[in-house]
Length: 212
Image (tube, rainbow, N blue to C red; front, side, top):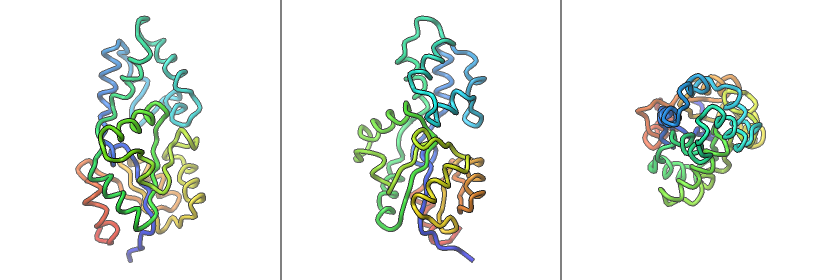
């Protein structure tokens, strides 16, 4: 029996924003950081990256730490640009769908991100889309570096559920990472593992109607 969805929590990267993590790896390799993959992958972050995404490392300290691994003439902005290289364009039809959905039911954003990326994509949405601020599309946006929890830690999901008074059984979480889906289901949320070929504006109507 299908349980009606009363609220939706969206992931950002890979769902509403196109990503290419390999571009960041390539950018750092081009700067001379040839062991970048040993420091970071999308699926298994080292403590430095984990701490950046939970707000326990300041952006300037993150940059200075990476700078020690790079040639001495590397500029801070080159490191920032390389770190942001993975962030591509927004999926405008998806954003427009979310905007419309907000009028019908509570919608939220929960993103594993960091202050450097946050500043970049908030600037990008103003450049690329009609929207002034990403947060305006949601009843509330939750960012890991702000709340101190990153997916799939239960603390992040529970923060949203409790703060918003949500019933997990009638709340849908949409994310492209299988570990994050498992974390959401562990706290009782309904969850959909978003695939690369899927698009929010065509998928969500069928999910909300109970067709999937």
